[in-house]
Image 1 (tube, one colour):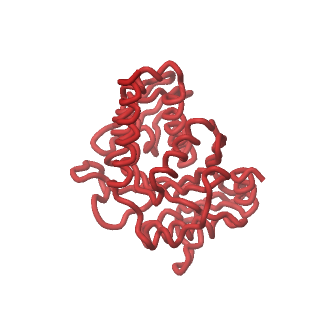
Image 2: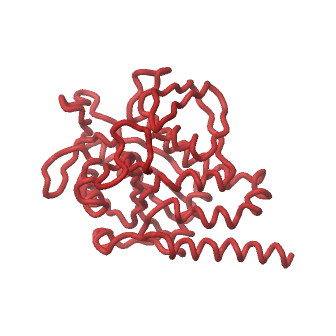
Length: 298
């Protein structure tokens, strides 16, 4: 019993030290955020940057300088309840001070502060972003590996063209993915098994990865191994992201993600006029309003 309590304390200490030694957000980002309480409910903007690690073999991938937000998701977290909304990265949005453009370009132009203001302006309906989380592509696989990998079930096969020096080839059915495989799975844009797929399916795969991570932690079958992996999970979790949240808020967020299965949604293009000539996606005001109301539980 003493050893078990000591191991739990090591896990807690690892989490706290990792949180306060990991890079945080700038003061400009914190000023762009609205107040919120993770107990009563907060909106967390999750941004997955397309900045790649040095040495990547992916054509056109940036390894330094400004990068676009490869994925955009809002998580509304309250105690025991989680809802998620994904925004297609090519959505046409008003970028404050820069006219209209792809919503993911706001991150490249002005970093998280401009991305926060752009998402709020795009969705409207009184939504405020209370916290921000930037996913680190270099460290995200380490967290999944610390969990022991994740399990996903596919309704269709996935065969992607090469990117980052690899291809994703998964058959229909269940698969166990390590960190590197899970990251590649979440980033697939073109699927030869279903050529008509677009960013909506990509967003759904990203949500599937998050759900798989939650299921991995929440399943009693994995609790014995999770206990022994505790310090490693606790250390890697804060380092897989960059956020304004401290150890207390971040632990509440992770608890909410584990205890609340949550609903997922993806903003859908306008059925009558989905795409513009430049490839941007049109999303109607009505679609945005309905999505915000669902996200906030109105």
